[in-house]
Image 1 (cartoon, rainbow, N blue to C red):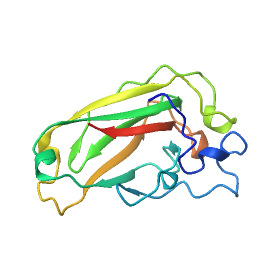
Image 2: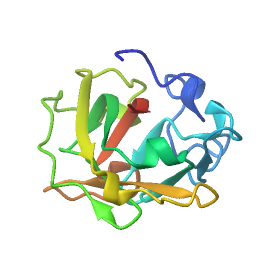
Image 3: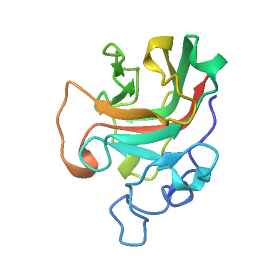
Image 4: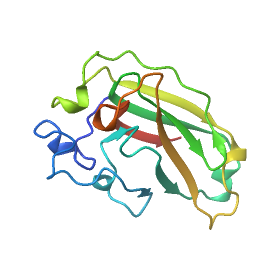
Length: 163
């Protein structure tokens, strides 16, 4: 981890355009592991714009029978934005905010803050045991601060891993 969001949707545009620019693709859309390209997953998640993104994935019976570590790497965040993930009916505890610069990173042409990795233990009980059923990882930005639209709490995604 510690890379960039450039390979994700709109990633290559964010040093040149404001996230609200009409030439930028929609920030919404979900992701299907094994089907979707990385370029279909938004590089930024804004609480008021595209919160609640869902990543669909399947596990085999051996994988679904054990706990996993979910790692979410960010390159920066705005006004205390951080991801509180849920998998199916399980929701993580409230994560603490990472230490980030006090600027509007995502709207001033940079994604670079202080790289940070959140780590969550997802219990085996959270996963679907039927291998034909999709699991749903929902990504919600939370914060103790308010803003609106592209000035709402946000994160810049580096990577998401389920180990």
